[in-house]
Image (cartoon, rainbow, N blue to C red; front, side, top):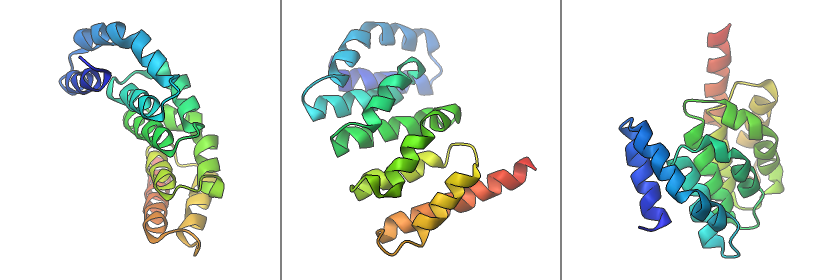
Length: 167
C-alpha cells in the first residue's frame, strides 16, 4: 500500500467513525509520512501534507505549518487543503496558523490558487475583525483575479454572519 492509498483508506475510516482502525493506520504510517514531508521531491511533500488532513492527524499540525511555508505551490496548496479539512470541526487549526494565512493573502504568495485555498481555509476559523478586513480588501483588489475576489467576498460575509450569531 502506498501513502496515497493509506490516506484514502484513512479518510474512509474517519468518515465511518472507525477510530481504532484509524489510530492503527496512523501508527503504521507515522514514519513514512514524516519522511515524505521532508523529502526533496515536492510531489512527495505535497502528498504528505495532504495525507495529514485525510488521516485527521491533529498531532501533525506542526508539520502543516512547515507545509504552509514550503517553496512549492503544490505543497503549500496540499497543506492548505489539510488545514481546511481539519478545521471543519475544530477552528483552532485555522486560528493557530492565521498569521501565515494572512501573510499568504497579503500578496506574499504569488500563486493565485494557493491564495484562493487560504481564503477557503479561513472560512472555518473564528470571525476575527482583522481577517474580515483583510478578506474585504482582497475582495475589492483590482490586482487580484476574479475568482479570488469572489471567494474573499463570500468568506468575509460568512464570517460576518458568524460574528453576528455569536452576539
